[in-house]
Length: 337
Ligand code: EPU
Image (tube, rainbow, N blue to C red; front, side, top):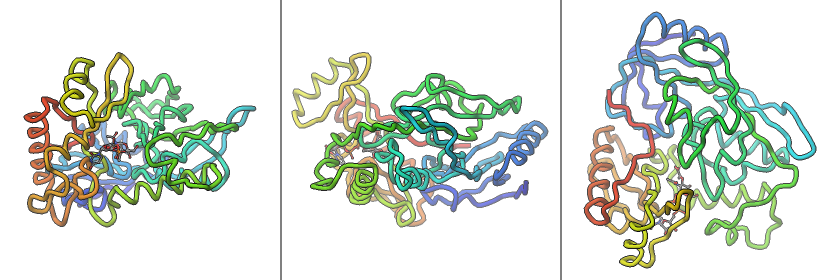
């Protein structure tokens, strides 16, 4: 394992923010994982595990070790009458994994096409789009406990998935390195095409994993920016969950506000709509801004610093709070050493 000092992370975060890590390495094998854990025990410095860096904002330099997970491999591990079980290593690119399943005739991941990031990062925030979450398709995952080096299998239930949340994000943050995930691909798929825009874009095509995946790719490309072209971290805010009383009061004032019923009588509403109503869509402050086609996405127009992006994020939180009395929660991890 090759350890570098004061290494730039610009290429390793999808916001393309210039920032440095005091130590840096890439993890491509189990031996590298063991070496990393040993290094960590000896140095006692903080450890930041990075996948595609697509859900992170660096406000300043990182004072510990950044380890980028690069392990590769996709393999069919089991099959029964209902499912095919497919295991993918943490360092695989998420979208390439989705396309591998689609092109090999396996259903289940098609709605999650074109989500940036890696396989290992997907369970952290239970990635979701167009009516499907990772929780719906994950069978189990394998993780290494950082303090002991022990490998552990987590069943789907043990991952404690919720909307953009998991055991690894909420309960055991920084305690595990996710090594691989195993998904279960149904042999008799129930296609999810009810989400607004999906059915329309399928038009008269035959409905299968390939056509749904292609439609989702086109939909995402039509309204979300490609991080290779313009730095961003996808949705910067979570859709807020409102109590029934708060929801009723808002809906009376704003009949066009959309709401999606959740567990515990909560109502999920659209953060993009709230931000849009405050006039933020397409606004720019220096090199940081709000994407012109989607109010939930903050973008780096050039050489924005993490601080500039964080400033606009906080201005948005304050104006939504002032206008609607709702405090938006940030979705990506914010590193502020
Ligand atoms: N809307 C606006 N203004 C905008 C954009 C959207 O008012 O600029 C309103 C519209 O009424 C629209 C509604 O918001 O109908 C919902 O918009 P959209 O379908 O784009 O979904 P979203 O709730 O804004 C979520 C995920 C996205 C995911 C889409 C599609 C979160 C935080 N975001 O966005 O995930 O792609 O649904 O399923 O849950 C990501 O996590 O990075 C991400 C892009």
